[in-house]
Amino acid sequence: MLNTRLNCAIIDDDPQDARLVARYVDKASSGMWRADCFHTLDSGKAALASAEFDVALVDLHLGPDSGIHLVKEFDRKAGGTPIIMMSGGADVDIEDTALTLGAYDFLSKDSLDARTLRRAVNHVYSAHAIEEALRRSAALAHTSNEAKSSFLACMSHDLRTPLNAIIGFSDAMLMVPEGMVKEEVVREYSGYINQSGKHLLEIINTILDLSKIEQQEFELQREWVDLSELIELQIAVLRPIAEDKHVTLTSMFRHDGELLLADARALRQMLTNLLSNAIKFNRPGKNVQVSTSLTESGLEVRVSDEGAGMTGPEVKLALMPFGQVTNDPTLARQGTGLGLTIVQSLMEQHGGELTLESRKGVGTSARMLFPSSCVSDRIVQASA
Image (cartoon, rainbow, N blue to C red; front, side, top):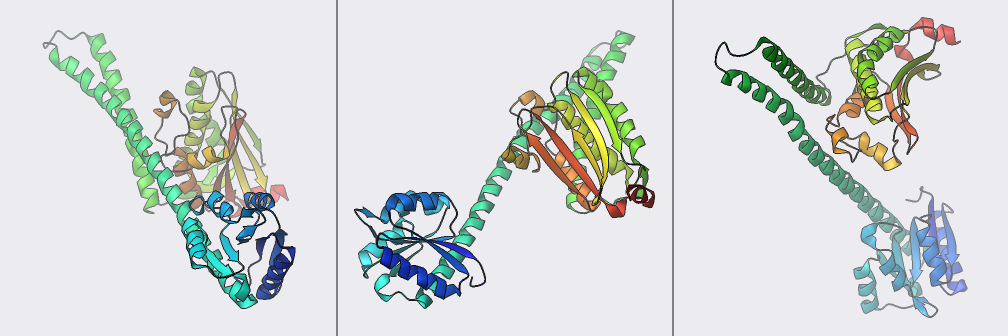
């Protein structure tokens, strides 16, 4: 860790001792580590609460208080700044107490030198980094499991609903004696069966597409695509759904050429996924806009809505497989929670990226950025 810049908090009620430890810190790292000194329990608490420090060296005695209070308050299991406890003398009982409560190490100031301090700080910083990585992995696994559980709960409903409709309406027709079924009833029930079958196929195709993408079996069929024409076509396809929700669909093109080297089917799927989300979570009377623009990095396609919006943590959840941000069960059942995951994976295959910009109560903007290598020379020249 000698080549890593670290911020060390020294919490000691004796200014002279604190300065001595600070000199050891400076000597141990050849000036790479910075040390700030604090002389009371309250100032030490404020320093650790600020999360500005990588390691804290805390004296056992802080005037009338004890440094043990800091170890107790800043629980090691919850993360935060790792603490090295210090004391004027070696005391096995105090050392055991400090380590049991969560201190990472215990040093005797009577035998402290730059070499000892360097070894302790390196060990503690590395151990803390490993713990933090494990904590993040555990949190991610927990969130992923919750998302999968939510997905399975929604999928059980999504799969059973069209299946029940198919079985129910077909049973109803089979139960009627031959020749007694009215033609209009057959036509009506056949329509319900057809719609339910298509809905079920759409759900299954979505899951299979994600499986192919994850296993890298989804091969892009690249061709030069008229982007404006493709966007207008997808808007036309989804306009009836938008009108049912009293949402307006518009487009705005800010580039001179429309040729994009991409898989047309994948591009249609990505636009459909983003537009469907924008329509679903938008508010009645509001607008969903698809816009394009040429940047130094490539060609940008945005789908923006004026819906509920999301917080930062909700954006991260939305981008996870099976992630469902909404608490509205009706809205949750209108999708699998895989739409954004598929868009993100397909964009990566195109060499681009998907990002979400969102403000709670204001709306969300999904941005697909295709690299310059996917943009025709005509577009690049037009922007020069």
